[in-house]
Image (tube, rainbow, N blue to C red; front, side, top):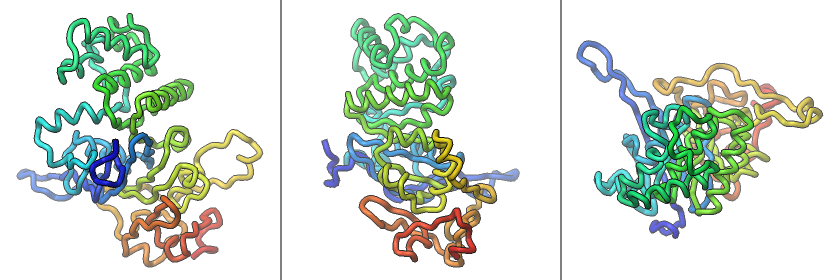
Length: 346
């Protein structure tokens, strides 16, 4: 079912901001803000997976939580099937929880250690009045089988499971209310590499089986490549590039995206030995006091004067491929080769 906004988008995020106030002094005066999400736009179509990537502190998790209204937006709109999530009343938000769910990053902290797995998975069913008693027990067993666990696991506690098994419990809990949209917040970053592939494959299988739509948040681009339909790259609260997965990996336009992709190891030693790693100088700027102009200019090898004063807009350069970069704009949509350094390109 496509959204009522007429575009076929399940989710549309418009000019989204989330600032966290900083108070100091005896009177707790407002002295500044952490600009975690600072004017973000993206859409997600029904049945696709949008990968949201970036370094730690770039605002990915905050964006995901604001989309679900686990955090209130400072400004902007989140439209889910045409409905303005931020304008909904408390009871309507509660109903919306059946359609929008989250898989948390830490499988150890996100499960209540005093509840059995059966109670954890059945809790959403009881809260939303979907099933009780024997019906709830049957649904829990069905969900546990669905995520690769056994029905008898319902009687056990979280501490009796491995990290991968706990994350499967978290996935079962998110599926209990049959949602349409799931925010997967770094769901495999706390797991061993061997277990990561199992959880990713499980998420893909569930997506095909139930027609799920994902916002998949991660900092590992090799993981995102396997599961995403499109990829959005975030840097210090702003999205700098969005493209179809294959386009982004084959032809990254933004210098920051190029640097991220260069960090992905290639399993062929001959190819790996010929490849140039892009090492960015400096640290990621603070979201409390981000630099003027393009936020990446303090670390960018091809930055010039315009980058220091003017915020670049997201421009479309190919079908579905958008980037916010003055260099790309002034070179007719061509990507800089930042492995050659600024002397060649400036």
